[in-house]
Length: 239
Image 1 (cartoon, rainbow, N blue to C red):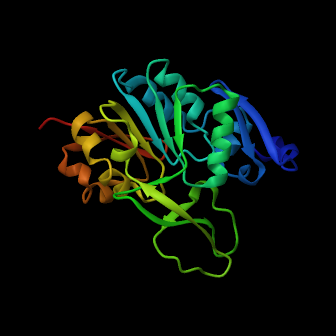
Image 2: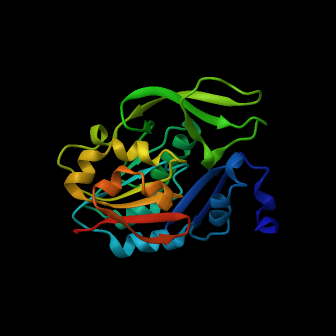
């Protein structure tokens, strides 16, 4: 990747595109793994996107939490089509800003995006955006309950909402796609009504068997289906 990308790194914002749409990437994210795919005009997590295309139920919308700088939004918008929505959530202010740029650049009329975190209950907490060495975490930005700081760290105060409170009543959901850096269980517990009513497919990053065995979704008759890229996919099974 790097010889092709070198010319971009002096720019504050980088514009690129692939088969799904146009993208504006903040330069400080340009070294991330996902950004490198887009800068080479490729599709990031193509196995996951193809799985969603094949298994999307056109009777329900999509939820995408931890949408980062909007890398998947053009593809998900195409899949949802004219009659359904993609409900996106991103607590990092910079990532949220660039996700909104993606929405406007591609005229993604069916994206509903909110600048908040998701969890089991409504509360205020902290989002870690710089590590102990002062490095930008980017896509690895994560929620931390403690307001204690190590030298070099930077945390932002954010608001946590529940999915059950943020999705309009009686809105059917087909897929929940989470990239929330080990906060999946908290998000799922805040979506218990959606899970029970609509039984959406769950796409969870790094949510392996050890996570599933103690998760609320096991008690709701979800089972592991397959793995695409770094995402573990669970679906409701009638036993």
